[in-house]
Length: 127
Image 1 (cartoon, helix red, strand yellow):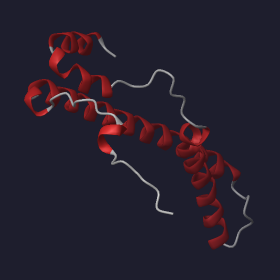
Image 2 (cartoon, rainbow, N blue to C red):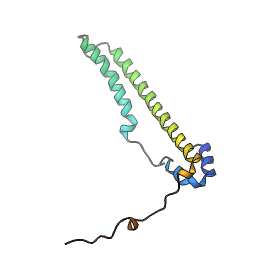
Image 3 (cartoon, rainbow, N blue to C red):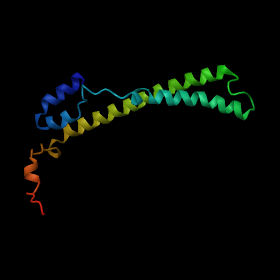
Image 4 (cartoon, helix red, strand yellow):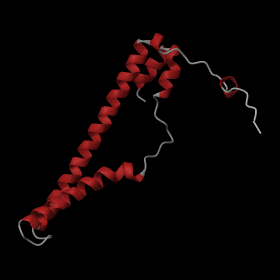
């Protein structure tokens, strides 16, 4: 969390609980599919497109190997660009949510804590 956000949080103790919900979990470790899925998908597509072009041009699949290397490289960079776009989108969304919560604390009253015993009715088994 940036220095800017920690300053905002300390200035607004009435919405501290809501801002705490937006903090990232320090123990979160993304899965292998989340980390490398876009890279593998884009690189596979980059490899497949020249194969398809070779097939449609009635050439062997692996002819023009330089096209395969270039297309896989382009696929990798497209995946990195896409992951950066998604990351920037999520950061902007979180910033807007923090700003909205700080500007409108009356819309975010702290919920009262209740126990299950207050919510659930007494249960008697019918035999």
